[in-house]
Amino acid sequence: MPSIPADTSTRRVFAVSTLRSLPPLPELAAERATDVAIEHADELVAWLADPAFPSHASPIADPIRLHLRNRHHVVAIAGLTAHDEADAAHTASDESLERLFGSDLANFRELQSWAHAANAIWITQDHHVFDPIGRLLLDASGKGPDPEAVIPFPADARQRKANCEVQIRNRLVDPVEGLLPLRGAGEICPVDAADVARRAIALFLVATRAESILTGKPLDTERMKLRCPIGVAALSPRERVFFETELTASTQATLGRAATELAWRYEALMALQWALDMQFDLPWPDEHADLTAVTRLMIDLPDEAIVEQARLRSTDEMLDAAELHYQSFHAVASAQQSGRDLSGIYDPGVVCERLVALAWINGLTPGRADWDAASDWVEGGCV
Image (cartoon, rainbow, N blue to C red; front, side, top):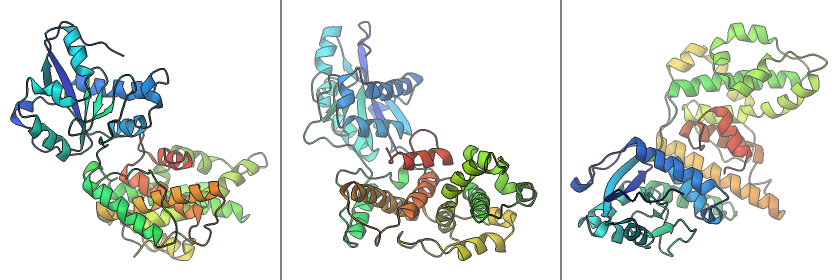
């Protein structure tokens, strides 16, 4: 953990916001993001994940890491004027961020309001983390959080989570306690509609080939490449391996296992069709998609027209669906662990495939934003 510079008269705190657009900063806090500020946020993410530090074991560490990884802005703000290193260290160890600001920024109340509106948490140079109004979430020794401190989430994300919990309870399923909300509309940048259309075409190719292998009538992939170059170009790295592996006696077993998994992509394809407003609604995930209807939508229009005419539903609609399937995913996992049968309420495969599609469109996976990463995220338990 870095020490506080002894030769610096002014220490900084950093506001880390997950919103794409920041509200206007107070006049006395006009210092914007710098390379140093961004590096410090990256360093804190790594430090929180390091088992060598006490903070790693804190239950609040994962939500803090998630907030930092989902950031769109880091704002550096001058704070305490430190006469010497010892004085700075003493103040930084205090549990109140207000004391860190108090001597230099009389408008700390204004900064609190700004941080709340910006969905921001505060981090210090010596790895203390505070909520928007300055309550301790975690300090460098692993202490925290303050009983009243909260990880901020946009109001629409919290409301969406509550609404989905009602829907799940109406199906006589208890939502899993302790789940954090997914992201708000102001935090995400959905995938471009044309790219969603291209991904839908790629999924159709993959699922069609998988189905042909399982039925013992494998399609000619070279012919598929000629007829559907848009879909071939949009294949993910893993899909490309499956698509380009020739079916022989030596690869039959491997391709058969892959085909069993990839035939499920029809369910993900239906979710993409819904996001593109090609499907009227997205039914409750308790039964398989109508493959005739899903397939017909991809055949009736040329691939070029599907891409050119692509339009996405509203971000709120897509996040509503993502939140519902995210909570449903955890409800299914919890039921499986406890031995409860939810087969009449959910089809686990449908839940998982739709969640991959919705997570990819909304950019909900930490780190990489590609399709294979979204699949890994769901397969790994959405952590």
